[in-house]
Amino acid sequence: MKDFLASLWQRRWLRAVGLVLIFVAILMLHPFLRQTVFGPTIDGIPWCVWEDEARRQVDRRERSWFAQILEKVGLSKEGGPGLDIASAAALPVHIHLAEDSDVKVRRVALELLARHAPTHDAETHPVLTRHLNDDDQHCRIAAAQGVWHGRTDKAGLKVMLAMAENTEGKLAALATMHLAEAARDAPELFDPLAKLTFSENKLVRTWAVFAMGHFGPRGVPLLERIMKERDPRMQKFAARSAARLGEHGAKLTPVLESLRQSGDPSVIAAASHALHCIDPKRFPKPAEDD
Image 1: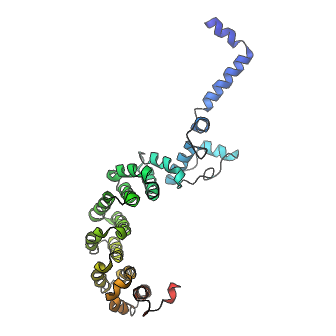
Image 2 (image 1 turned 120 degrees about the vertical axis):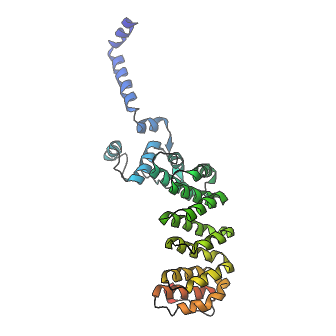
Image 3 (image 1 turned 135 degrees about the vertical axis):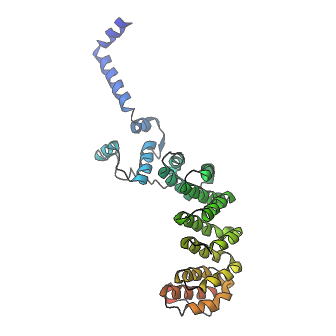
């Protein structure tokens, strides 16, 4: 066998072929070339390019040396070869990255999956559901938001409520903000959000007040109480919330008229807008609404 191999090696054309094959094999060790030939690709672009771009969006690191070489020879460009990493085409990449050990990568992936949940529920729901119990609180909120928006799954509301009631700072405010958005389609949120209007966390309280405009007449007493407080910020948001009530907010007319005598321009503007939304025949559209 050794003699046979030696005789083959002595033939120049076979040596050339062998060297070429070895060179090609070495090149194929890099995922860009290997995936270009054998896949997987997304829109004809190797998977590794999409994943590298997704990770780069998280940590803003420099492009890899290989990506920089491709850019220099004209095979790529800054930002990827026409990549839209937030597009539906990139969903398989984000589904993969949702299981990443880097929590920052996982957060961004879950947020993007949540954004696409209403139109791609079949692909996103199983992943988002798994992460309702993620170790990271931001990941849990993103997953809960997607689960709710994808198929109005009450499991998402439970997670967001728990976060709003049992966490502090911006995290609780973020959960309450998503609950305020969900309130349009979830009348059962009235009681827990009404309790949150008494929160000591100003951001939580603000979003809870803002949500009251989704509950029709049920929200009127709370909004009236808040508008009678001396906190201009809360008065402004209560008035903005009242504007969503339309004719259901008629009982708020007296207190809104009193707010128009406030010395705070933002409160006056919010109250004037709310009065017009509640009774457009009696209260003309404010100039600032044009």
